[in-house]
Amino acid sequence: MSMVRLEGRSGLWIGLITLAGSVAMLEVAVRMGMVNAVLIPPPTLVIQHAAKILGSGGFAAPLGQTLYLLAVGYAIGCVLAITLGLAMGRVPIIDGLLEPLVEIFRPLPKPALLPPLILFLGLGDAMKLVVISLGVFFPVLVNTIQGVRGTDPVLLDVARTFQHSGKALIWKVVLPAAMPLILTGMRISLGIGLVLVVVAEMMAGTGGIGYLIVDMQRSFRIPDMYAWSLILAVLGLGLNEIFEWIEHRLIHWSGTRQS
Image 1 (cartoon, helix red, strand yellow):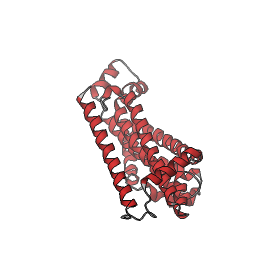
Image 2 (cartoon, rainbow, N blue to C red):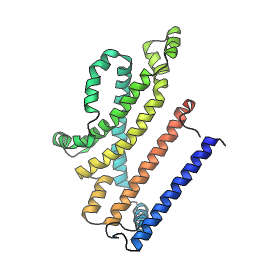
Image 3 (cartoon, rainbow, N blue to C red):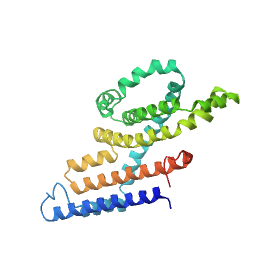
Image 4 (cartoon, rainbow, N blue to C red):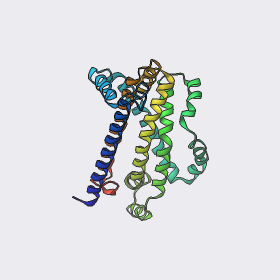
């Protein structure tokens, strides 16, 4: 077993122990009355409510709605970003035309776009998909451009020597060389997309996990509110682990992650 793998496992155990210790300390503080149990219930109670939600099957519909919006918005944002990033990275004229627009809109917090999007698109799925796609778009775009520009010129020269066409050059050389950076941007965007879909659901009030968290808070069902937040946290962790597993197998040759 490699030293890197041992260090990774030791770091994981330290993290788990720290998390368990923090939860235990919060449990004791709430039980001893040091923390208001009405506003912050004991973690064991929150876990019980989360287990009850999962056991009843009531999580399936809101979870499915949230994952559907995330998947579609994420796919749209990634496809557009990779396509445009390849064009901007390879064609200086396109880059010169679009870079000012990208730099203007990229720093803009995407939740700030929700009010005008609600004004123009209403409270339906269209508004949510647009804001998710915009949030996903920019990190993937920037990473794609950097990955394309960082392609080893020797690889390009070899491909031209073998008389690869422009399309073959993109698919066989540029895209594989840029893939580690593209996937890094996609992994970052996955978390951003999850945040934005929840925020959009909270504002729209039309279903999904985000709506349920706000609804539990408004009806003062505090343990259920925290239970849904816990389910959302586990969902985010699970999605990140799945993506890292896929990333490792797609670019195992790059050495970005050791198994």
